[in-house]
Amino acid sequence: MAPASKAEKKAAVDAAAWMFNVVTSVGIIIVNKALMATYGFSFATTLTGMHFATTTLMTTVLRMLGYVQPSHLPLADLLKFVLVANFSIVGMNVSLMWNSVGFYQIAKLSMIPVSCLLEVVLDKIRYSRDTKLSISVVLLGVGVCTVTDVSVNTRGFVAAFIAVWSTSMQQYYVHFLQRKYSLSSFNLLGHTAPAQAASLLLLGPFLDYWLTDKRVDKYDFNTASLIFILLSCTIAVGTNLSQFICIGRFTAVSFQVLGHMKTILVLIMGFFFFGKEGLNLQVVFGMVIAVAGMIWYGNASSKPGGKERWNHSLPTNKTETR
Image (tube, rainbow, N blue to C red; front, side, top):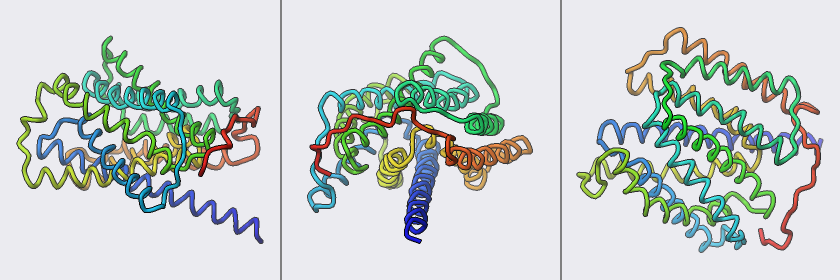
């Protein structure tokens, strides 16, 4: 009975973590879409810097209250993480600006095979045939949902390439650093959020001006836009934390595969809230395929041999305080 209870408790916590991530991720997309479309706040990189500044404030308060214990992350690892994480943010913004929506979605889908490759090469993970096929079904379903016009240009391809590899590396590092240094999600956020906030708030306004030809210091802030910015920053704390929790509990590949449920929910929520794009037969068909693939992936990857490590050893720093 005890093992069953332990397994049930883990399953419940896993489900809660996924739900937390889905709700906050979908919520922040809806809020940011309203902020940019309705109030013209098009400074995406600066806004992300504000998100990490708010997250830094949260982790600092929790540490002062004793809810987060002191921990250590070597400066070299911190700098590598911040570098790939910031390249991910900037790369995604530039890719969205320079590419068609269709090619942008294809680039996002390619993060799954890239994440698989990283796990195979760096972590010696081996996937079963069913696990590989289920991932292919998810990619097909989401592709049917989201990919429409596809046009490619050289600079857009380069931006997408950088975005895909840096995002995949960032998500891999989240899982790797938590295991290697025995860091909780709060601990890792406490180390990385301040550095990301400082760098993005410093570089963000210049990058946003380059992308939009608009200056954030010239933006006409009003009460409504400030409320939406504050709401976006508040939800972002949950989004950042839930991402670290989910990747820490699972892997970057699982986070990517099951995370496409958020893409489906965004399509549905966009239909109800904005009503500009209907749920046509193609989109609904793609959703059914994607959900079926996600269920198959969850079942296949949890079976013995579905996803296993060739060499289970990983260097850990046992001197860290949790």
